[in-house]
Length: 79
Image (cartoon, rainbow, N blue to C red; front, side, top):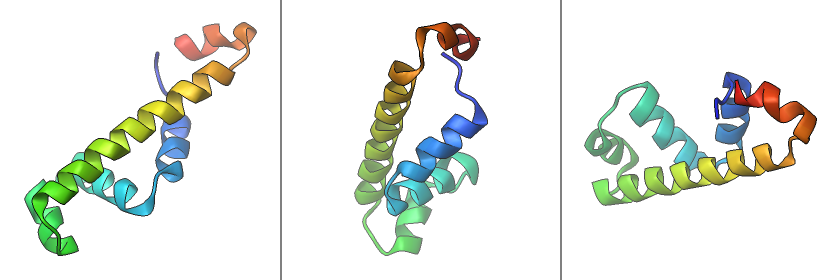
């Protein structure tokens, strides 16, 4: 299923702040996990775990969104 930028934005906004910022820094700004860890003053494993949990949370949020979409609208959301 394709996700619109609005759906992704809503899902990102629903994440805990640290997960949201770390995912944004890593995937959008292309900052390494080691650099994010240095900036945040934490171990790089903490950043890795935070990003992995955030991705799982995004997946859960988006799955719930698509489960709530009425069947008549699912065709529009699958394109």
